[in-house]
Structures are given as C-alpha cells and as structure tokens.
Image 1 (cartoon, helix red, strand yellow):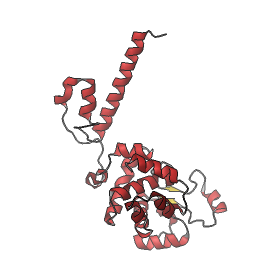
Image 2 (spheres, one colour):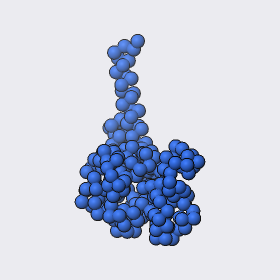
Image 3 (cartoon, rainbow, N blue to C red):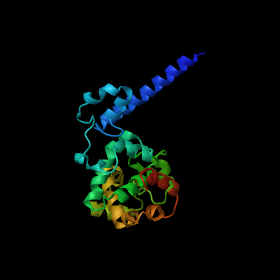
Image 4 (spheres, one colour):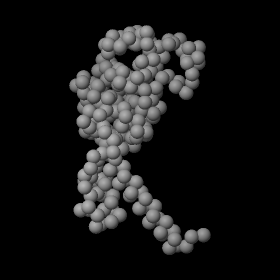
Length: 234
C-alpha cells in the first residue's frame, strides 16, 4: 500500500503527464502562445521554459490554408462533437469549404453543420450509410427505397434526391448511388442541402429545433444536437 508521500508523488506525476499530453496536442495544432498553448502547458511544468518555446509548423497540414479552423480548433471540435480528432481534421475542411462556396459559412451555420454531422453519423464524423453496422443484403430486404438508402453526412435518401443532388453537383448519383458516400461529394451534398432546405436560415437565427426538423423531419436527435451546439458556445 503506497504511503501518503507516495500518493502525493503519483498525483504529481499524473498532473505532469496531463500537461505534457496537452502540450503535445497544442504542438500538433500549431498553438504556441496564449491559453491552452504549448507555452502555457510547458510553463505550468517549468516556469523557466517560457523563453525556450519557438513556433514551428503544425504536425498535420489542414486543407484550404487553415480557414476551416477560424471559429474552433480541431481539438475543440472533436471535444464538442464527441467525434474522433483524426476524422474531424480529415473531413471538416472540405465541408467548411463547401459551406463557404455557398456563402453560408457563418459561425452559427458551422455549429449547426457540426452538430448535425455528429448526430447523423453516430459520432464518427465520416460519411456513413444507413444502418452502417448491417450489410447491403439487410438494406435491400428491409428498406423500400433501396438502393437509394441514406448515405453521407446527412443521409441522402430516395431516388429523386439522388437524381436532384446528382444533377446539381454534376455527379451521376442515380446510377452510382454509392458515390454519395465519397467525402468530397458528401460534403458538397450537405452544404447544398443546408442551402436548399433552408437549414442555414434556421441556424443563422439559432433556431436549433427547426434545424433538426429540417434535417430529420422531426425532432429525433434534438437533445444530442443541442448538447453539441451548447459546447460550441450556443
């Protein structure tokens, strides 16, 4: 059984390890000064290290010049959505770019998109297909709209939606429905849907129940969406 002094030492080591982990994460994201930066966490470990911290390039290369992280850092998005950090880094830049293309890339609309993706993809932050834990045989037997079952970040469904969005995006989704699950196509489909279905309008006025209704047709998943937008500052 550890002594009191040993327990204190274990607590100190745990705190040091947590600070080092946070510093490494900040380093990966290129945060070198200010709160939650490499400097802040290393300074907590050793007050003498402040002047030794020098900016370097992030460990990963965010697409689109990093504009996707204008409102929140990758770590903040992963924590708020409950989605894997790597998936957020890989997929959010293309989604943000598609929203920006349609002039709907405001902070409020981005919050709605992030929360919607967290709900619709079961916290994977990846384009998924309906009942993705089951196989295509099950889907063909049980879904009357097969093979046009839900795919993507917002579950594009039914043949007429595959035809409409395929025409708008310049992709033959009607004859190749599986392509709706490709990340870039799925990102464009989400942004187009947010614009066409006026999800962005509801998001802009922070009407989160209406955002959910326009995406889902009802309010299933609303509590999850509210939790995510709450963690994003709404």
